Length: 275
Image 1 (spheres, rainbow, N blue to C red):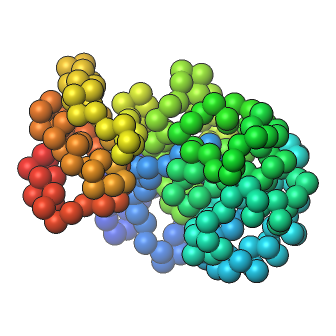
Image 2: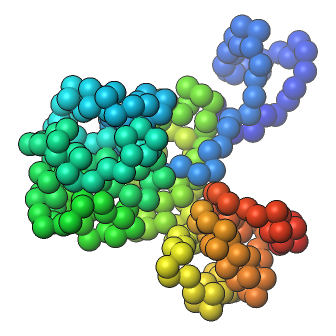
């Protein structure tokens, strides 16, 4: 299949050798592009237990789901999508009461936090951790997790079935080996959508480490090299600092603010001014 629509009209006659697909009265659209996806995480999520809305809404339902869960081939139970509306604040003691013996890690739906039970903490060398609540951004503990290649072919099938023919991987810390591995998966046909990457031009901000001067310098350096930036903003403070940095460094037509989860009314005009 080509990447460009060459001709539109009634009664088109196929050229010799052209393949004809019967859309059966359906609407034909150009392929969709998902501009923010984390490919490996999305693939891993297909094999993970969903423990938040819309699958789980109560503490009793959470207990039932976890009691029926079976560890994957690596010996772990991996759960995702948790929100405090289900059973309040989770920590190692709460999880130990639900799953005492099997290593269990649950990701908060924000993606910013994992909660591990005692069996899991022991596996990653943190048996003495006070509560088992570990920030996703702290990569030290995750080095102790078992590594297995996610099923990119299954994710590919899921995306293309919804008309997605291209994706931008927004993972900020992809290294050269990660990029090559994903590109190789596409060349082999394992992952069919076209690939773009934000790394190494993406930065995640944290409220307790906001540094306007450093962010401005990083943006300016990217722009001087002719490259855009993507800045991950999920709080008002992060957005204000990002706007100030873009004003100081100047903007690029392809600059992105990821999520912009909280945008005060006063900042809407600022974003418009930046283009």
